[in-house]
Image 1 (cartoon, one colour):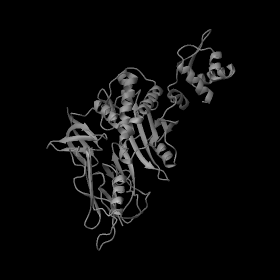
Image 2 (spheres, each protein chain N blue to C red):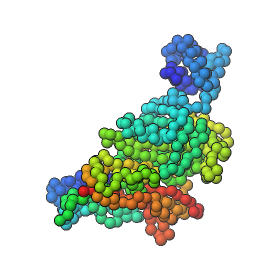
Image 3 (tube, one colour):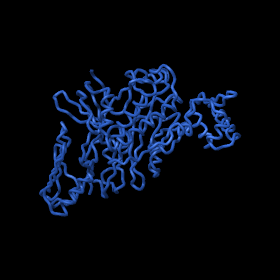
Image 4 (cartoon, chains in turn blue, purple):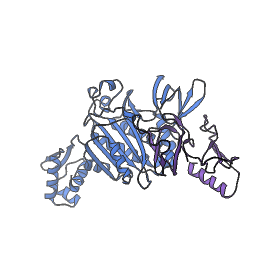
Length: 325
Length: 148
C-alpha cells in the first residue's frame, strides 16, 4: 500500500458520511485523479467502498486480512508502536522480534503473523493457530525498567488484552494468573515474553500475545477443544481482527506509563479480574509443585499462596491447576 | 532497592571502611555487615512480606579470597523466579563447569511471570560450579554459578 492509499484509507475510516472525490482530494492535498486511483487500489486490495452518485465515497467493509498500513492508519500516533510488520506465515513472531532485538533494532515494533507454523508456549506447548482466525503478534520493547521488574510486562499485557476484549465484545473476561485470559471458563488469549540483550549489551524484551478471535470449536485440535475458546464463540458473530489488534495496542499504550510509575494500578486491575484469587489451586513451577489457596497478588504481580499449614509462599512462575472453588 | 544500589552501598562501605550498614524504610529493611573473612554479608527482608524471601543470609560479590583458598566469585540471581540451565529441555545447557565466560555470556534463563529472562554472567571467569538446579525456584541474590 502506498502512502497516499494509507492516508486515504484513514480519512475514509474517520468519516461516517459519504465524501465526494473532490472533498477527499482537498482534504489530502492531492488531485482528484490521484484520489480516484487510490480508491481503485483500495478496492483491488479488497476494501469495499461504496460510490453513491451525488454523495460520494464511503468505506463499507475492510478485507479480513491484516494489512500493515491499515493497522498503522487505525492506530494513529502511538507512544508504544513506531512500526508494524505483518508476515503471511512465519515460524514464530517471537523469534523474529528476538532476532530484531539482538541486531540492535530500537523498541516499538509490532510483528504480526497470519499463520504461525511453530506457535508455541514455552517448552513446546502448542498454541493452535488456524490461519486468519486469530491474532498472533509480538512486540519488541526496550522498557526503562530494572531487569527484576520486567516480570511486570506479563501482568501489564494480560490486563490490557482483557480490557480490549471486553471493550470489543462487551464481555467480562478474566485473568488466570499469570498470563492467560479467559472468557466463559475457556482460554482465549495467552502471553509469553522473553528478554535478552543485543551485542552492545542493550536489553530488550519480546512480548508475545496470542488471541483466539474467530475460531469455531472445530478449529481447535481435539486435545484443546475442551479448554480453548474464542471471542467469536462468546460474541456469537465474527469479529474484525484489525479492530481488535488496534484496541489491544491502544490498551497497552494507555497503561504504558503505569508500568514504571504506578504499577499498583495494574495490579489492582489484575486482582479484580483474577480467575484464581480465593480458590484452592496447584502450582507447578519447574519441578516444584505447591498447593494452597490463592490469596493475593503482590506489588510485582507475584502470587501469594497460603499452604495447608498456613504458611504463605510467594510465586513468580508456574502453571496453575484449579482444584476447588 | 535493587542489586545495583546494594552493590553501590557495599562499595561505599569498602571505601570508607565501614563494617556495618542498616537502612529501614516502610516495608523494607536491609542490614549489611562485613563478614569475618572480609566478605560483605547481606541480609535483606521485606517486613511486608508474609513469607521471608531471603531467610538465610545471602552472600554476594565475594571478591576477597577466603584464607588459603582460591577466589570464587558468584553469579547471583537478579530476580525471583524459576531457574533453567538450558533454553529447552532437549537443548544442551548454556554453560558447563570449566567453561570460560565473559560479562556478556548468557548463562541461564530465569522465568518470572512467564517472562523468560536471559541472564548474563556480568563477570569474567571460568564456571567452577553450577549452584542452582534447573527447574527449581531461585531467590533474589541467590548464587546461580560460582566462578574462578
